[in-house]
Image (cartoon, rainbow, N blue to C red; front, side, top):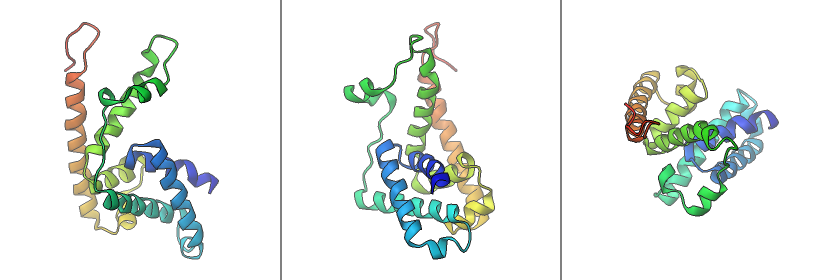
Length: 172
């Protein structure tokens, strides 16, 4: 469980975009994996836990049927105040802003595409492993990943075009 906690939490955060919900999903996934340990230990327990986590995220989404997608400009004043500020005047926050942009773009993807992109490209699973975990054909994984990445490029490209550069012009 100690080894699986961090990768599961990263996956949960990438799937839901909220640190607190990610912690909750991770704990529920670990609990369910523990309760079904006899089944999980037969193959790969981490893969079992990832599948449980993805299914829990879908169950949560189905119950609520509504997500609030907040971009960096739409953060509340309390959330802005809680963000760390670098001592170098903000230059160190560029990586955090980039990560936030990727997470916001991931949240804009349909759930199926998001799951495939996260498992395939952010957790570095092979196409066969993703297909086995999600119970879909390898060809579907390939096409879904391709469409998801194309959509991410579009979304992140739109963010890059709207971001001002140091000269005051917009980036291309």
